[in-house]
Length: 106
View 1 (cartoon, helix red, strand yellow):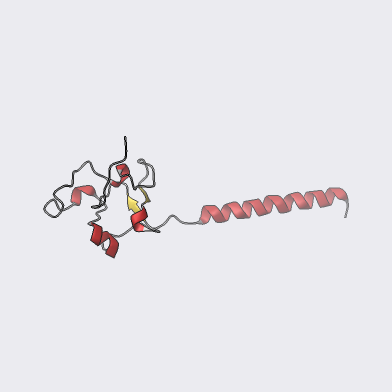
View 2 (view 1 turned 90 degrees about the horizontal axis):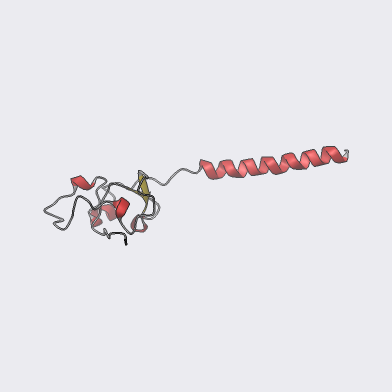
């Protein structure tokens, strides 16, 4: 095997390995959305749509309170969903709400 062939082979191995690693990272699916029937979601009064929160059960709720502007939300306000430490391994809807809502610091 000549030096040129070895060099070509090694470059192909490096490029191929990098491509394989990158495809595995990109293939990982986003965590699922938390369901409103989930035990933790029920306990916190979580709703995927803040407009559907029971005003009698949660009188302090305001329509402007959404997960997207909560201090616990781990996504961007423009995202459809993002992580929340209260629902480990799952995402919450950006327009959702739960009783643990805390406004982001200005």
